[in-house]
Length: 123
Image 1: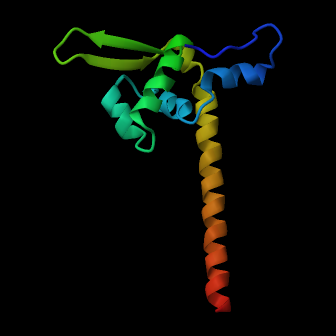
Image 2: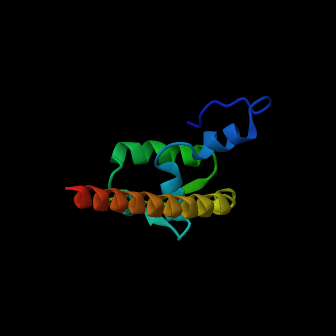
């Protein structure tokens, strides 16, 4: 299920993006850094993603060895996902993405507040 990538000639950044690229993969990896999660928990932690999209992204992450899937022989079946050691090596990247995203959101919110103040002040 992993995406096709030319490991011999491709760019290193492209290699990273082939594994963590996608809107929800970094979010899922981030959530799994805190421990095992059931599918329903992951869906709750990514409310803007569809169940189908989460399923597809989890399958790709599993195929790339970033997460492992544990199926319990119960009725109803229980499935849990867990980050692997390879997946844990992405932690500095995920943390850097979190920090950058936080700074970006803060700056954007400040810009919006400033714009709103200017609009109200001119009216």
